[in-house]
Length: 373
Image (cartoon, rainbow, N blue to C red; front, side, top):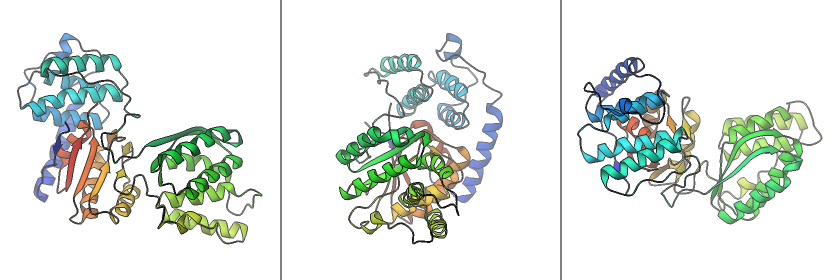
């Protein structure tokens, strides 16, 4: 059963106190914990008499995690297992430990903590599954279709499989992982895939587009008129799909100057009313990235665009692994501004990230629904 809670509502004066508290905790944590082996030992698992209360341990573990002090967060949570407290918070200790095991890819530690959890709470043990490929609990989340490796003339078989998978799973999110190589022929082939999905009225979004963009940009040069303009046309289309309006307009201008013609016709945009292509989400949900950090302008602009079409803002966080501490308060403030009174819900969010949001709190309208490993 999913746990639902809301970040505490604070006044502006309390926001300042929270900031001071976070700074004070951060200054003390790095000196308190050393590097540890991942399988617990009796010494590391034994609770210290000097530990703070359970609620503060959970707060500190979330801060350690966001600061990438993974071993310190693990050690603190192992020690906190013997502390008294309400059962929902006691269960959070194990869920956080299981998340750490997944994030660090330590199946042996995961199995030990899962069995410990089952013994303490007299229930079935959680099962190991990859954090990046785990299916979200919400039925509204989009299927993810991955493309990685090379985008070249030799990628035709892989792109054909991508095209077929997309046609079967609409709506879906196409995610571009590490692109090792790209050439003009590969760009032309991917444009054909996009065109096919448009003809099939597929609903899809783009994730990891920055990785693909970085691989394509070296193929173009403003003022240099190449015989094959596929890289230009693919970049222009990617900027539109990702709602990068300034970059889209700039590329169109550079294309017009370079080729002395009008920019490529936007067939997908012409059918936007029939086949909307939402940035990183679907018609009812917005799919958050794996990492949220400053600057937030682009992410907040995408959420704002999504919010204009819905009465309830639903964020799917099943891919979200880490929220940087410096970005937490600005992100919540941005959500509050975008919501304008609309309810905001974040589904499938990890306990460590959720605890950070609860700690930072502020005037966030966010409702949190946890995911479990």
